[in-house]
Each structure stands twice: as C-alpha cells, then as structure tokens.
Image 1 (cartoon, rainbow, N blue to C red):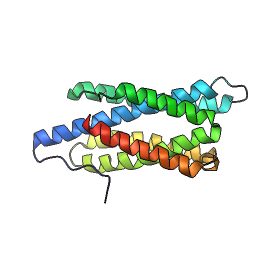
Image 2 (cartoon, one colour):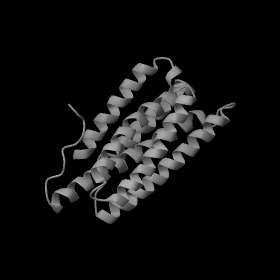
Image 3 (cartoon, rainbow, N blue to C red):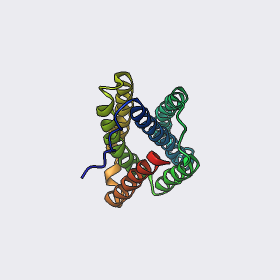
Image 4 (cartoon, one colour):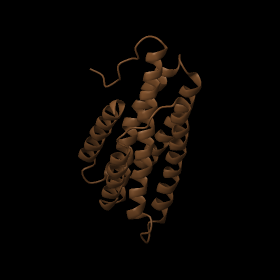
Length: 187
C-alpha cells in the first residue's frame, strides 16, 4: 500500500483541485520548515562555540524561506487558500525545532534528516505527477527537492544518525510529517 495521494478526477476542474491541494501542502511544509529552523536557531543560534551550526541553520532557513515565498506567490496566482492549520503548524514546527536543539546539535540534525527523508519522497511523487501537466512547475519542484536533499546530506554528515535515540526520533518525526501532509491535503 502506498501513501501516494489519489489522482485527480478527470478534467480541468479535477486537475485544478489537485494542484491546489499540492500547493497548499507544499506551502504548509515550507512554512513549517522555516519555523523548525527558527526554533533550532532560538536555542543554538547565540550559544558560545556554536557559530558553525548557527550559520548552517541560518543558511538552510534561507533556502526554506525562498521556497515559502515562491509558494506564497503560487497560492496567489492560482487563488488557492493556504491551510487553515497554518498557526498550528507554525507553533508545532517551532517547538519541534527548539525541542530537538535542546537535545543537542546531533538531534537537531536528526530532525532535518527525518523531515527531509519524507519531503524527498513527497516532492518526487509530485514531480512525477506534474511532469506531463505542468513541466515548468515540475522543474521548479525538482530544484526545491535538490535543496532539501542537500540539507539531508549535510545533516547526515554532521552526525544526524549518531544522535541518542536517532532511530526512534526519526520514526516519530517522519510519522508526524506524513500525518501533517495528509491532514493539510484536506484542511
């Protein structure tokens, strides 16, 4: 059984509804990513001796903010409403970022690794779905996925999988991400 969404109903209205669903989820995901990094930076950003991770988190947050700005524009262009759960996702994401940062640098990296593992598959599914319908958007999502993969690789290289309880932490975060995607598709 797959987690992939049900394909759009046939016809232009079905395709438009499916595109709106994709954009809403992607916007919410990038919004959450920005707030995860903000939470991590709130804990690690000003700590003495943590300049390297502070710079790394700030750079990654910048990538996510650029993605979020693009999805903001796409929501406007397509007249798609954002998720009604945006305030909840902001708060939850900030808490996740701060919480994993309080557990240490490797746990913060484990959070990035876990989130990006889900997002990598999520974007790949969307790209495959959009290639025949909207090649320009598919290409844009491919670029975003490449940024997310770079974040994941950097997190792994920084010790993400060496964090205490990394496997459990990763499983919980990934399950939360998948649930958030499913809920945001509908609300």
